[in-house]
Image 1: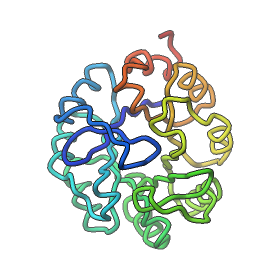
Image 2: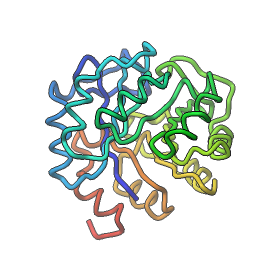
Image 3: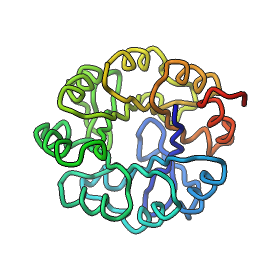
Image 4: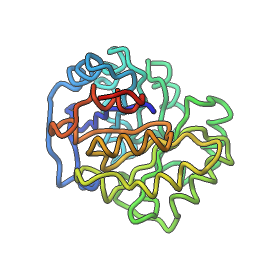
Length: 240
């Protein structure tokens, strides 16, 4: 299993929200690239980046900071406000390893199908769910679409990687929704990355034992609750 340490961007700074609430934001570092370098030094090979301003406004807002992050040398996936092919091309041509489509995947499913056919595994979809239902527009609008069902539809459309965030657990340091990820793991042909509430070494062990593709860790790292190097070893099945 791959560990994806996370950097959420707002106004060019590394921040974290609680349950996706923009009014519950904590700033952790004014230099996100320095954070990424510290992840690299700890042994990380991958990085998960979300442009929170872009997710909310519908247009990416932190392009310069993201370019700096790609220069660190990690496999960097980026999401937040990516809703047209021009932005996909800009990111992929500028050093981003994989782009994550979110709101647009719900609003225009045909767009996702076209982009997957054209760019293959460099396209992922972020499925953000509140109480099992998909949320869009920076998590501020909840749809009637069941998240797990949507994941199956994405798989059928050719999407290989899904980042599934349990919004109710995100930033709460209360543990991952393990039963949910067991259900998602059963979807054949889909690489699932767990996001939201991964806070304990037991979470990492359990997700790794499921043979989940990846796990995103954010606030637990920033608050010192988890050690990144230890988590990477656990995810590989090694002794921490």
